[in-house]
Length: 65
Image (tube, rainbow, N blue to C red):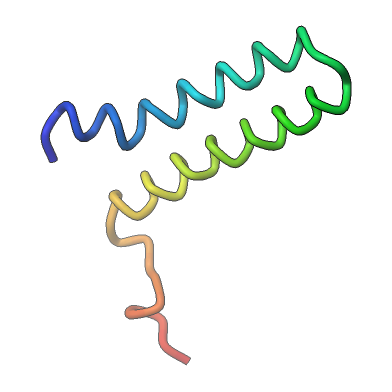
């Protein structure tokens, strides 16, 4: 994977999560709650992408029932 694509795939959502958390401190509580939930979404998007990239972590093809 090229360096630019890597940065967009993993760094982009992490940057968006950070921005959401920072902005959540300056807005109303309800909008802040929505922004924190969005930050969790972006963080877990990156985490699951990195698990997939790690390989050998299992999956539907490896553990059929």
